[in-house]
Image (cartoon, rainbow, N blue to C red; front, side, top):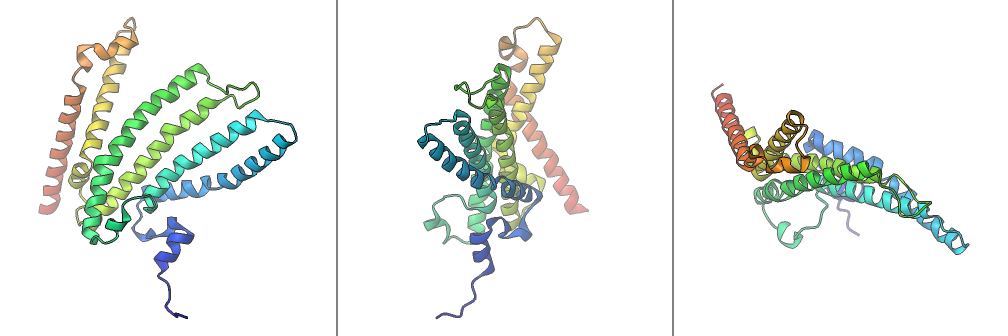
Length: 259
């Protein structure tokens, strides 16, 4: 038998992935891990709910609220697991290639993947799901079944919230990999997540202008606000704001080097 002592990181990545490389974790990483550790308790509750439903259905009783509860728990837990996989790097990727890359090459790939691919997608989804949740709240959406769970809007409201937490986790992961490349400045972070920063800047400008027109023109149909000249060029405005942030970060970086 081999007497070789297993690597502690290999053991931790199996028994508790959230503790793997904890020393390098940022506050966003710990937020995601702590939330996931709490939400993980949903799974044993979910298993009990599934088994209970099987037995009572066989006995001739069907509880629609229990069916709804299973979907609620599963959806909430799985979306939390999405952010947890980002933090612990346990998500699926082409490991047959990735595992043989150097540390710096892996870091460059991760920065691009998080900043230019994943973060923009999650920002877009958060924006869409916020409207989706608001519409559900406004309609007081509930279950299709008379004895189901009738506050479905609560589950739908959790979607943009959990996507926001996943954004924080992905941003923290990108920052960790930037540190591995030796570039941890604000300038590097903006460049590393340029499409994401641009999208957030554009959305911030859009909503500020939208509410400005909504408040100053109460008689204007909300559906027509997006056709107003003031909000027609928010994409270019967002790009301009992003470039200003880049310039400010660059000047700050130069000032820090001189100091």
